[in-house]
Image (cartoon, rainbow, N blue to C red; front, top):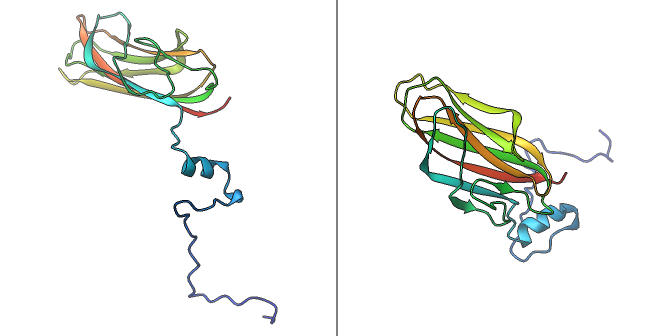
Amino acid sequence: MSDDEPTVSPTAAPTPPTRPVLDAIIAPDWGQWVHDATVHDYTPPGCIVSQPTFQSATSGVFLVVPWATKVRDPYGYHTTGSRLTVPAGLDGLHLVSIGIQFGNNGAGTQRYAEILVNGAALTPAMAVASPHMGAQYVFITLTQAVMLAPGAYLEVRALQDSGSGVGVQGWCSLLRLGAA
């Protein structure tokens, strides 16, 4: 080893990075996202809605789930009972997640849930559950990333084939991941 090379001790611990303190000046090389996250109360665009009360789903007929409760919707995605509409300026890639619960009814062979964009089902975004456990509640979850244009709307629909009405309730979350 020459005298010009630095000496490194194998037992020396590296110096931990320092964390910014309140009102500290943010280094430009940290990037704008750090500035936004530390200076602003950043809430990513999206919403969470729910239907906490069972809605009757007729056997063999799709039920478009009406969202009764806005859990979180600071950007105004929830426009009518069953629709989540992309506001102007918030187009791009969105992560859509749903959870649908079917009431206690073991009859029939299938329970379905799917996401619709502008009235058309996403493919292959249908989830199917089979209630062959007797009279048990069935819960379906489904998550999919979707490119959405301004004004595009999402709906969730459910289908069951018990031969009689079965209650359906659930939730839907929509999170914008980035611009188109």
